[in-house]
Image (tube, each protein chain N blue to C red):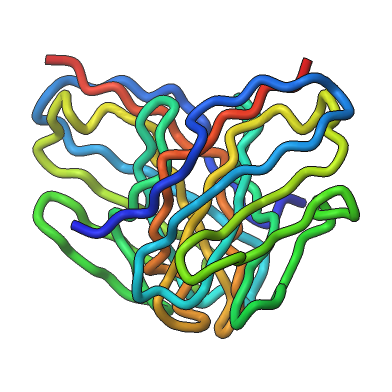
Length: 111
Length: 115
């Protein structure tokens, strides 16, 4: 079983739609949960960072972590064409120095 | 906004040649990392570095790989004898505090093509 599983998509939505991106994981030691955005041939850019369970909101983005289900989500409200990118979930254990990434979900927001 | 810078952006090399990829982390950061991403695959951890020594490395980071912080600003990844399967995008990253890997800032990457 993969440590982190993420549906690679592709996912295509109309502008203004609510987008839901998800990852599941198997390692109970993961405590930090992140979402990165990656444009083609660029480095990952940190979007959201959550410690342990709960919700975190930042503008149009909401990250949710459910540790009991080993499931994390990223919601994008009022999606824009500029949101078109690959979204990577990543996680690490407490005190750990390595991130484990999902495969990334390719999102296209159509005008 | 401070950023991690990497050079070269693209390097083409022959199999068996040595390659050095360079990174300038964010100036007040203390923890440095290399990740790689083979085309179409996930981003994978290679190595973390703190206080002039490796703190953790993955199974990918074998004897062909080494890292160094030769001065106060640069952080390098050396591949001694490149193989075809080393072709990938290599990302340098840095963070300010230990264990706070969520606040990891990545560079734009160095694309390595091994022929």
